[in-house]
Length: 239
Ligand code: SAH
Image 1 (spheres, protein in one colour):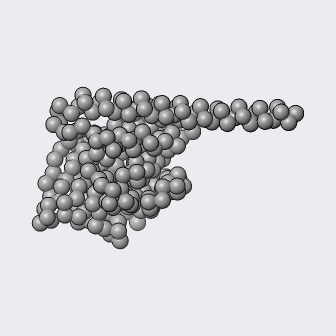
Image 2 (tube, protein in one colour; image 1 turned 90 degrees about the vertical axis):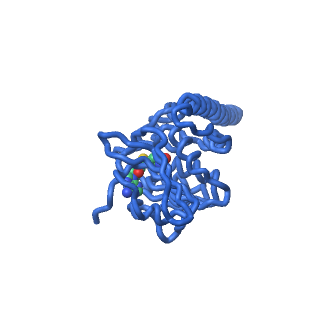
Image 3 (tube, helix red, strand yellow; image 1 turned 90 degrees about the horizontal axis):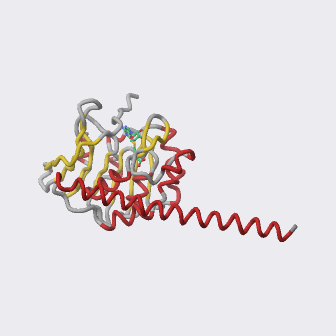
C-alpha cells in the first residue's frame, strides 16, 4: 500500500517535470517562429533583428500560464488567443516586436496600457526595473493582478489608460496594446524626453498601423509607421 502511494507520487512528479520540459521545448519552437517571421518581414521595414534579450524573455516567460485552461495546448502557437471579455492576448511575434521597439533597459520604468492577460507585462518585467500596467475591464484586471503576483516589479491597476498613470510618470517607454484612433496626448506628456511610445493607431475597419513615437528633448515627437496590425479598440471610461 505504502509502496504504491510512493510510486504514484513519483509518477505524478515525473509527469509535472515532463510537462515543464515539453512547455520549454514548445516555447523554443515559438521563439524560432518569431525569428523566422521577423526575418521575413524585416525587409519591408528596414528594422534591425529583434534583440537577443527580448527573445530570451520570450523563452523564459510561461505563456501557457496566461491563457485560459482550454487554450493551454495552443499557448505556444504564433497566434493571438481569446482571454475572455471579448479580448485577446496578442500574437507572440507582435509582443516580441513591440517589446523590441520600446528599446528598454534594465533601469527603465515602463507603462503598459491594456494589461489583458498580463503576458506582455510579464515579458517587460524581465527586462526593466518597473512595469506599471492598466486594464479597463475589471474582471481581466483582477485576474491579471493575480497571475502577476509573483512578478515583484509589476504594479497593476484597473482604470482608463487613455489618461496614462500620472502618479508614476514620467516613463522611459510606454506600450499600448489596444488601438485608439489618435495618439492620446496624456501618454506623450508622460513620456521622458528620449522616451519611446509604441502604439497601434487607427480604426477597426480602415486598418491600424503600429507606430513608434520618439519624444525629442524639446517635447516634440518624431513618429514612424512600422507594420499594419490588428488590435482591439482602446475603449474609454465614460463614468
Ligand atoms: N497586453 C495584453 C493584450 C491586451 S488586449 C496581453 O499581453 O495579454 C488589449 C487590452 O486592452 C484588453 O484587455 C482591453 O480590455 C484593454 N483596454 C482597452 N481599452 C483600454 C483603456 N482605455 N485602458 C486600459 N485598458 C484598455
